[in-house]
Image (cartoon, rainbow, N blue to C red; front, side, top):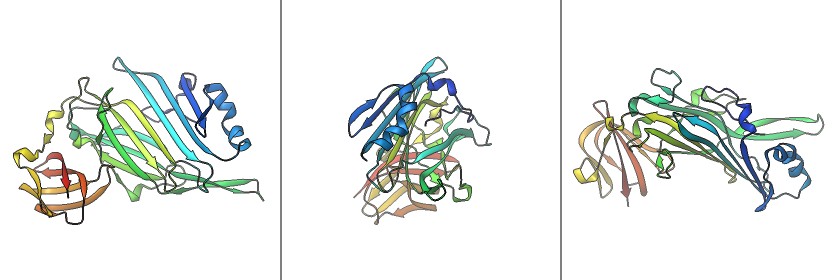
Length: 291
């Protein structure tokens, strides 16, 4: 069953009452009531032939700085597969560079996103009428957009192996907000997190609004027009020597990193990538196409 959590991890039981629910079985809606869902979820799954399920939960019992908020969840899983459990988030919060939990920042460089989760699959032992959950890897994609828009931009994150915790939390991920370079009229931004397991089961969550940045002008947007970053042949060129250059695919996964360079071989890459350049404590971000 679902459990809504606040910014500090507190359980928001009241939100269950205000949650709009839709459960589909093989494309047909079988439940659209919160009360029915809580009573029906597991009995229905056990009683029906195995099939594909889609569960959506929408909680609009949220207001932040006078803005209408929402938490949206969509889970898709295929019960015909051996692994029919979708990955799930266990925790998510923002903090500043000192580690203090907050969702409000003066500049992009002040903010950090942290979350944990995994593909938890139940292993049942009939002999003991009990079982346990294991934790398997998943694919993670994170993006942000100005509040109330669909202008999603990649927010790169990386797994921190030393912070893996099982049971309970699973894999730990961290992403810096210093890549945020799109202005928001309200100064607030939405966050989207997509988790997918190797079988194709997935969970998508949207938090709106998720975090606030007062001044995104502190981020310098790199542009090929001013020749700051460009690709020629199999090489990515920078106009200055960078302290660090990191390339991410459009799912936010790191694909290449180098330090103290002015050019970088990209012969092994093909497609569109996000480039994050750190130079003299200034972060610059752009997208490049590599062919």
